[in-house]
Image (cartoon, rainbow, N blue to C red; front, side, top):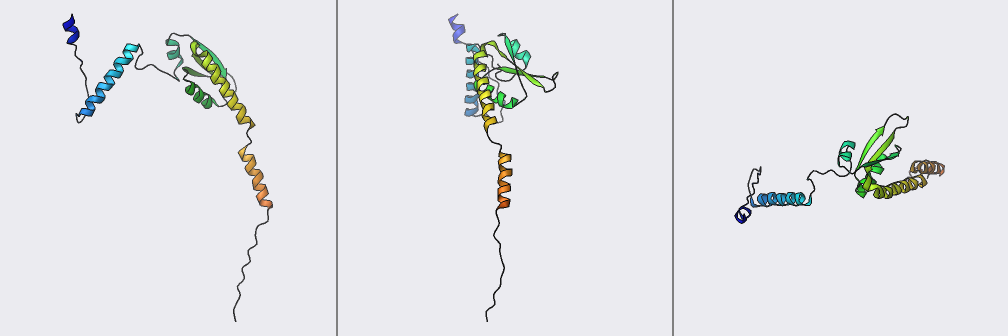
Length: 159
């Protein structure tokens, strides 16, 4: 039994144009990372962040749903990614202004609540900011009213 454990071998297949020491080291590091993930019980291709509804439900942790409007769905996705939430988006086209359904894991409910608070605070902040276009139109009108310098061209002759 002890002899079997001592004589374990590992086969590494490397596709490269030039086999160097660095290539061997990087291949061995990749193998060690893979072994660490297997020991930790995590699949190497476990999805995080945005995924399909089927993938989210397939993780076996239950999914919850939240409806949001189309206003700034990209901003909401950015905030969800910063919080590390596993989620899936589904567009509901049955309503006239389309709404989005956000599916997320049941264990991420508290994190999603915090992310939604940040998103709503960001929306409120955007509404309070003055419109840059309106300010530019106002400043253009003010600039038009200012009289410009009158340049006169005079040529004096010396006698």
